[in-house]
Amino acid sequence: MSEARNLRKTTYRLYPTPKQAAALGALLRSHQQLYNAALEERISAWSKAGKSISYADQCKSLTLLRRDLPEWADAANCSSQQMTLRRLDKAFAAFFRRIKAGQTPGFPRFKSLGRFPGFSFKSHGDGWRFTPEEGWRHGSLRLSGVGQIRARGQARQGGDIRASDILHRDGRWYLSLTVAVASPERTRHADGAMAYDWGVETFLSGVTHADETIQINNPRWWQQEKDQIIRLQQAVSRKSNKRSNRRKKAVRRLAAARAKVARKRLDWAHQKTAALAGKYALVATEELTLKNMTRSASGTVDEPGAMVAQKAGLNREILDTAPGLFTSLFRYKVLETGGEWVDAPTRKLKPSQRCPQCWHVTKKQLSQRMHCCEQCGHQENRDTASARVVLRWALESISGQELAETGVYSSRETPSFAKHRVE
Image 1 (cartoon, rainbow, N blue to C red):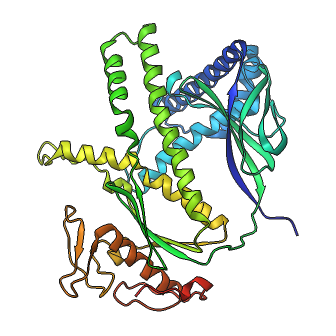
Image 2 (image 1 turned 45 degrees about the vertical axis):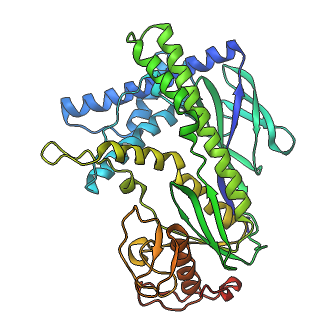
Image 3 (image 1 turned 180 degrees about the vertical axis):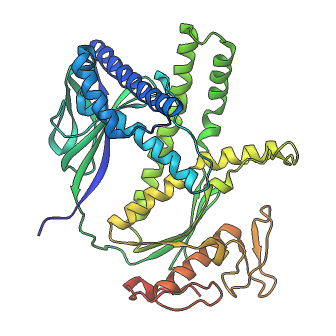
């Protein structure tokens, strides 16, 4: 029986020489031009003849183009160019899928070089080869037409290299590898349970099965770098000539400052989730719809919104905490350690409005930060009370007990951690 394998992404930073960086830039430009040419071909075929062009059709055109025009054959690897055509095909597939679903579609756009993220390769060895060093810490990338490029980084787990993406962000080059790794043995080493509620004032408020509370303060990455980023934004705005070298330098400085915030946020999220994941056999949280939470309050011309500036500031604070990123990192770490992850249904359970003691539901304004139950008199921090509701629901639903108030039922086998109850 073959060993089960998962696909995982791992990223290394590339350190090309100036000559190699110029060659990478030329490769990036050739892929950007191919993408735009393929998009133009699709648009023209539909507007002139009402004909749709498929990915296979464009691959055939690419073969003829490479045969008749040597500069296209010399510009990039054929399979890599096919991956660029595939990217455009996926963009059209997403466009039609949104139309079918009744969502707001976004027609594929022409890409400037600054907005073209990179290019991809398929089979390992076809125009590229990555050689990792011991323990998959650092390595080197051999790229056709570019040469051997030094790479630095650390993969959590090595495996069979399947594909790669060469990315250009903020003046830096990165190699993103797709690696097939052996599925980890999911052996549970902890027997506790916790639930948490995310917030802006306090990033995480949690409760454990042992009635311990966990609080993680909001690091407020945007606030830490806000003054510098605003100055850099103003410097870009003052330079109206988009072709000037000074404006390009200002744009690079602004991008570097924003990238620094993103790296700090990601590193912090990895550290916090790794510290928590190995401690608990069950982690529960409520489902969040970030798109709805960060929706603009500006409204329309006929029905203008209220408190638009305040809502915009709140949206900025919400996005700065990146709860979706934190949850996705936390989830896969918990599952890899053999634990169980539970998403509580927010609309049915109403964690922020339900009393964790008597289960009574009372509507609260967002400004009310204390839970005060009008039925049993229980008082507690609102976020902690919400986490306690989620934990109680998770433990009882996991153990097969019914909660008629929520309308959610479960008949799964009772795991060892379900003996913990929150009363």
